Length: 123
Image (cartoon, rainbow, N blue to C red; front, side, top):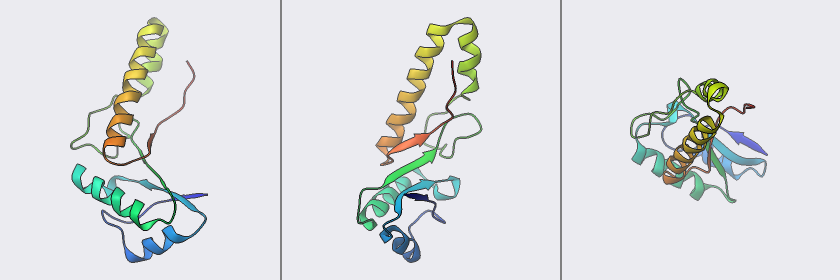
């Protein structure tokens, strides 16, 4: 299964053809695909409508400098912050990670994305 990117803020005709390919199982969005929250909702609907199968729709939205969607979304802290916090406050860090993950996931689901991506790290 391939997860592909698209060129802009709306689905192009050639990209619709890509989505019909049986090897394509998802689309990852980037900053170039973002104009507004409403536009992302519309783009996700276009992607789902164009695909002959359910798609994984995702974005790299981990926080800090790696947050593709900003306007209309919560400002997420850099993930390394939780690792640093864990050294002195393990339970507080774990709670902060849960809140961070919940916030990111709820905002992604609200606009039609299947998931956000973020770094994996060990505590």
